[in-house]
Amino acid sequence: MVVRDLEALEARAVEMRREIVKMMGANKAHHFGGSLSATDIVTALYFYRMRYDPARPDWPERDRFIMSKGHCVPAQYVALAMRGVFPMAELATLKRLGTRLQGHPAAHLLPGIEGCTGSLGQGLSFANGMALAGRMRGIQYDVFCLIGDGESQEGQIWEAVRTAATQCLGNVTAILDRNGLKAMDTSYCGKDLGGLDARFQAFGWHVREIDGHNMAELCEALDWAHETVDAPCLIIARTIKGKGVPFMENRPEYHNAALSPEQVAEALAALESPRAVQEA
Amino acid sequence: MSEKRETRIVYGEALVEAGQRNDRVAVLDADLFKSTRSVLFRDAFPERFVDMGIAEMDMVSTAAGLSASGMVPFVNTFAMFITAHCYDQIRIQICYPRLHVVLAGSSAGLTQGPDGASHQSLEDIALMRALPKMTVLVPADGVETRAMTLAAAGQLDGPIYLRLGRYPVPDVLPEDYVFELGRAKWLRDGDDVAILACGHMVAAAVDAAEKLAQEGISAAVVNMSTIKPLDVASVHEAMRRRLVVTVEEHSIIGGLGGAVAEAMAEVGGGPRLLRLGTRDVFGESAVADELLEKHGLTPDGIASSVAGALSH
Image (cartoon, rainbow over the protein chains, first blue to last red):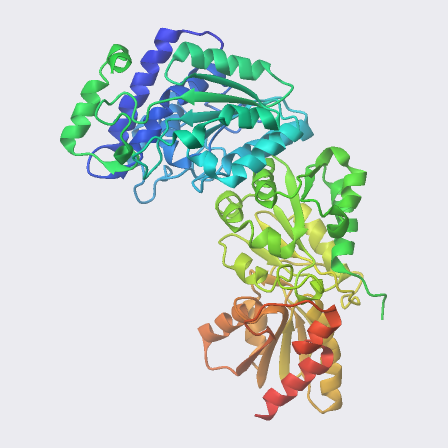
């Protein structure tokens, strides 16, 4: 995945968003907001940066992706299905009895899911463990971990930030989905996010801040993180919760919400083309 | 009688042996490696050892990631911290996907001693036993500690809690003892009462049975070193006597006593159950022997409780 075809990636991201909305559907509560804010990041990982063979999701040399903010795993489910790890038709089973597509990621059930998350704050430590295993076994790969800005309030995140730096895990990249909204907050948690870059830098990380919906910036930053091997990298991705669906954008009530059939239709209509998303 | 050994110290030696046999064994510690004895592994295999610093939750989650990428991590700190402090991480990241991670809880139980209640794990077996897919092992002596450590790095799979003590105990098992998961070892038979014990309490129960014999009471002693999966058949066999007794250096709630109570209640109609352990209280600072005495967990204390229960 070294060819950087931005138009194709942008089109892919719109398709991802459509599939996310379709799989969630109407009348059931789902985590729309965060899944849509993370969509471009996940698209850039699975369709551009990551060395990944969908036929061998347990290939020891694969790059790994951990969705630490586990409630946004629908974006990863869609990416895995589109890469062909499992059938697209299975997306419709999301959160239904007997499904492999649990509300939060279940690594033992679904190929392509690397670790179990859902209790916030634990994924970055897990990513470090995968990176350490690569070092101990002499296998080269990158480990990417998506954390939420709200999630970074968890203390364990900072334990893991320290470990990645002290262990010089240069193949670990954290991507912070900075959509500025949590589950209950109607106010922008700006105070909390101030100085995140300085905090990571103080621990010994390299930090870059980008527009998390700009595919060129995403690809550039992921390449930078791959090439930076002396210390772990943080990409702060400024995003919009609910990105691509105008009535959800920046609205905390769509963190976990049930849509009406009309709202689903409106969302899908808004996701007709890449241009529609960019103009939204 | 052989020289007394602390199971945590035998564990440290066995860990090096496990590392020699299996190059996937990795060891994590949280700044207690001299106490947990993982320092021996660090010196033998520095490239497979990480001192995580005082960050237990991070350590446990990191172990999950190590396991998911092909290593067999042994995670080390005091029993209370590895279980209670990291419960959520163990539950979701290790047990739920059934990753092969060995959680070695060191200096478990009352005999941790002078540090007091914060450090004395009296609920750890209950906590670990409640988790789906978890295996709970409490070795009785040095022989069994070595056997369990090697098994945990070898033929066993999935999440394993290995409870280790810092109280010197004599070997109660023969040198050629073969550990079988879920199989209790009957160390001595007896017709009146069956004493089911784990950990340090196995040696104490053997001595208690000797004392009871002098009073004309015939006591069987069973090493219930696998708490989960429980050897239910041995519990049923124990129920053929007038009294079943459990002895553990742990709360009587939810540990060995709790597990045996559940197994007995499910078949019903058997004898009384006497659970010996700490009775729903926290520990306190004192030397180990004083604490065992206070809670009736010495051979004399156990014999006296058993004789008392039989006379009712």
